[in-house]
Length: 354
Image (cartoon, rainbow, N blue to C red):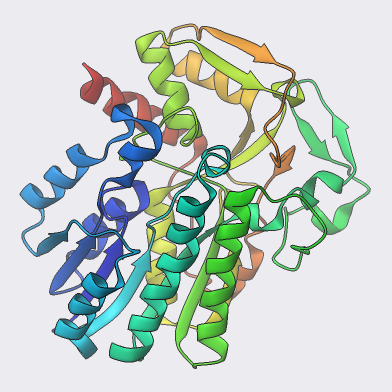
């Protein structure tokens, strides 16, 4: 029997993984306790998504477990043992703003929870593949030290700085910068996943992503950039643009493209493989550009204001250099452009909110 374990299975990436991988495994075990509701309120709850998974995916089994509870995690790993072939670890406290409110909660979930999963993998299914969903916040604000040119609607890296013209690579330093407490807790999980790969010879992949998006997102102000932007347009909710004149750039990758990348890694895994993976030069926008495109697609105007105060540790410009992943996995490709992502968000959020 081939089993995949997916943590954060009711969230954006986790649920996408369930849908895509359910036909490739005999059983999908989902672990999610809807902590997102605790972090961000009722509007961020993922119960609606969990219920859809249970109804629609016949080989899906859900466990309402906090990943900090190692005893309950170990019971699952002990029961299924070597039948577990893949672990995709998406569960996290995902907001750098929220982390400052409850540092112990943030760290215990993102660091200790990750350690629980890695150690159970080592003990009960060491031949499996472990994928850790990391973040570009592990680089802290080091990307802000690059030389930028201010254009009409975005910041762009100086064209003389050709070394980074494809985006930000994996060898950018994670030291001597401000990360946010969230960045620190995610670095801890990131390094643990690397170490279990290299020290214990386990197949581990670390994916450092920026803005992941898609119609399964329960977007809120503190997490879920494009999803929350579309939600504000649909509901006429006031939106706030924080700092950098709204010209800060984000690359956006659809969760389906990300899971497809995970699948390619599963088929040809590495020991502690590290990859920056996002929309890259294929799919990116500034906040201003995102607003303009969302208004065009929804045929409505966003009610927004501007605040000069940027978020601590926020990136002025982030575009992932995905060339390392594309070199290692040349058959992988993007399927969703930025325009297609926003159209899908609008269509599905309109159905869900009305």
